[in-house]
Image (cartoon, rainbow, N blue to C red):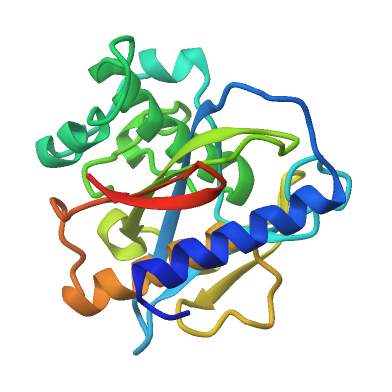
Length: 239
């Protein structure tokens, strides 16, 4: 995809309007959610983990997505083995309402780690805490944020985190399908055209490719693109 910001927003606008032509749902309040883009950088081109949602899902059926899901109330209270870096936590609270506190930002990181374990059977909990959910989120970069527009069957305010397998001592071969995601696959971030993905996933992969080109180690405190729908089209803001 063209790296130009206008090209990204035009692509998302067209994708959304095409979905509305198929079905339009009543207005819904977006729910906080998180996805983790886990990468294997053992080859020349980094690969990201995606899985296919079942055709019975109400939201994005039959499409390849990153593991992730909504933030549950218990996520805010889950202990961490290692916390988010300060520069990441600070970015997460920007452009949020007064009710969104630091514990909610922390809860988003827990949600991303929990969903990775539930959907791909990869645990981010260190061995000394085995048998519990106590993830190490210290390697999470805040890559992007996107709010599902009105009219969709579900609406989420999703924060996309990213990190590398080797940072957490994870073995990429240990992924296993789940009820939520099947055909889990490590896809090169620049060659995923043969796998049907939502428009926002394509855009986030393009953002990731640009971030890695800027710095292969993926900076922690970089500017975060924020996508949302306003006045009939998508907007890309940087926070």
